[in-house]
Length: 104
Image (cartoon, rainbow, N blue to C red):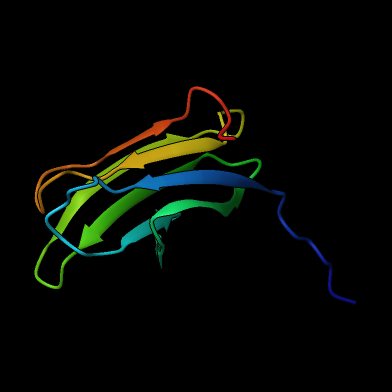
């Protein structure tokens, strides 16, 4: 009989924020453990390992180039709420940080 070993996981809450007057119309891509996953602006949750550190990134792609990249290393005991802020213009870096308090 095969063993049913499933790794321990937890949920991480993201708040993906786009500037009000952004000069582009693209969706963000969330990268967890090297795998990109399309996302939408606003709040959402993603599943990550509860025991291993994870490298989490977000970037934007406008069919010509990538921009707004931001990366953070999330440790198992770290805050599970992250905020991504996209750049105002379709170039430059975004910001990804731990939220100071849990999102309401």
